[in-house]
Structure formats: C-alpha cells, structure tokens
Image (cartoon, rainbow, N blue to C red; front, side, top):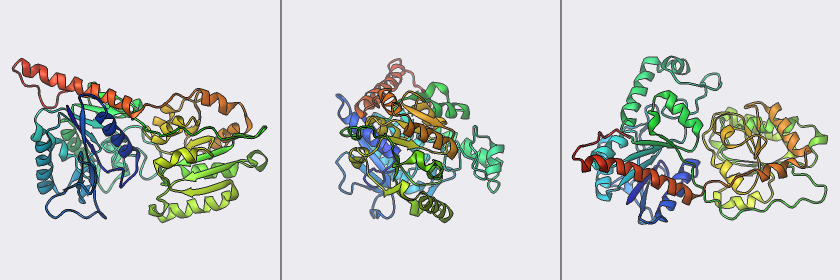
Length: 432
C-alpha cells in the first residue's frame, strides 16, 4: 500500500515542526512492511519554477516531489492559481495512485487541493494532520486577539469581526463555511494534542473523525547530562526556536533580568533562535534592548538545525518554552525530553498538556515574567529538583511508532471503504 504525505514545505528548504513531523512520518512509513510512501512538499521563491510544470524534484529522492506555487490566499487558505496548478496536481495524483493521502497543512496547495484529490482519486481516504488553528483563526492561526493580544478561547463571527473590522463578521462567517465545505472531504483529522482536537471539535468538526497521534521524533544520539562539579548547580537554561512575537522571548529575557544577582550567580541563558531580522521593527528593537539589559546573563547563539541539537544540549540543564499562544505540540518539547532535559513551560494549551508540572517540568503563568522568574529561581536553588524531574521524563514517540499508528489508522479507513464496495454499495465520499 502507498501513502502520499503532503507538506507545505520541505525540511531541506524550511525547518519547522510540521515539516519535521511530516518528513519523519514519511521515513517511518517507508520502513514498514507492506507500506510505501511518497512525499510532496510546497516550494516557492527564491526557488525558480520549471517552465512547463509546477512539479519538480531538484535533486531530491525518487519518491519526493516539489510543488511550486506563489499566489496563496492567506485569509481563505486557498490557491489563487486554480486552473493550471490543480490540473497538474490532479494529473500527478492520477499517475501516482496512492491508497491514502495525508495532508500536513494546505498552505501553498490551497484548501481546494482536498477536493482535487477527491476528483482525481475517488474514494481514496483523505487524512488531514492539524498543526495549529489556521482554519479557525484568521490571526495567523494563533487564537490570540489581534488588537489586544489576549488569548482567545473560541471563534465566532462576531468575536472575529472585532479582531478584523475591515473584513467584517459576515465575510468571516463566509470564510468559515467556505473552509468547512472543503474539510468535509476529509475522512480523519489527526493531531498530536488533545487540546487542539478539542478546539476543532468546538469549532464544528465531527468528533468521530478526530484522532490523536503523537508526532514521531528522530532525535539522534542522546546528549549526556552536563558535567557539574561537586557543589555545582543545574543552572544552564536554553531557549530553542523562532524569535517571533508569539514565542515569548520577551517574557523570557524580562524574567532573567528580574532574578536577583545573588540568586542568579553564574547561571546562563542560551538563546538558540533565528529569523529575528524578519520580524516587525518594533519587536526587533524591544528584543535587542532586553538582550542589552540582560548583559552577561544571556548568550545569543543564533539559529541552529536539528542535527546540531545533541551537541548543543550537552551544555544545557533546562529547556524553556515561554510561548504566549496556545501552541499544539512543540517539537522542542519532544527534543528536550529525548535528551532528558526538564522543561519550564507556559501553563496553557499544548504546552501544559505535554509538560507535566512537578513530574517532568514546571509550569509558569503565561506571559508573566515574574512567574517565570520564580520558576527559574526554584530550578537554581533546589539542587534535587532537576534530578527528580529528569526521572519523570518519558521518552517521546519515535518516528517508527508514529508510522505504526498512522498505518493502523490508514488501514482502518481503507477497510471501511472496502466493506460497502464488497456489498455493492458506495460509501459517501465525506464519511469517516
């Protein structure tokens, strides 16, 4: 059996949690008996489009394809290049003939690709993996109020209209109905967190189609604990991730500056992150000023790649995940646990679900630098805390285990398709 895994970007060109999760699943499925897999990923400028087709390989493997697009409707998650792009995409599907298609995002492809898949492949099961809240929330899928920055608990046309008065409640309701008309083609929705599945159930997706499967991780060799001299402290903290307004970097550095000098001592906060230069100028200026105020307490190490982590983790005791939005299942949590590093995380959403307070990490009140400073102070002052929390860490799901669980889901969906066919009846395309 053959699975087609679709990602909005290829990890060779763009590193992110969804790309890594989809790639690891692709690799895991290929290692399973009776399963084969093909990977197709979106790509755009500065990569040049092939003159004759948006489909390219660019030296990737024989079972990998790139799909070029550059005109995406971010509000409606749709493609503005429907004619030619969908024609090429449908021909690609008809030639490949996968037994199941698993979308990780529709960015670049457009939500219309769901219906194109149905046209090209008939009743082949369609699975969609949800990585954030983009269909629900037009504010970057963050579920944060666009004007105040406050957390948003539930979407509605009236509430969303307050965030986007220039769009208006009526158009936002049309957006919701438009998206749900395409999502009705999906047979199962997968997410690595129960929290996110709950949000989509509240939004109106059928609960019987919602399935939780953890993302699979290939973490490489495990970094040993940092060598600490007798009487030394576990006081090396690290942040891994993008430097954008939603990741809580300002909260983190603010917290570091609040810890008294006699408590902080020789502690260090390492910042491993990139893309600050692509953020709004006001945000860049605020972060750089906080970096200046933190002085020698902080080491800004720049961006990194996943293969670098085992070496980087050797100097780290604690990983901090200070995001100010709900998150889903940040890959940095899996990576930290793979290397046996306890986590200090915001107490909301997927972070609070994945990090168990007092068992494998600590929570602090989201967006509250004083609360984070208190948690870091505990980490510095309580010498037995790190070892106890480290002992509570469970190894994250591997890519092979995630592939096994996905294969079981795919096989259940295929069996449901086969039963009506054997009885001479057709199952409606949108059933689960």
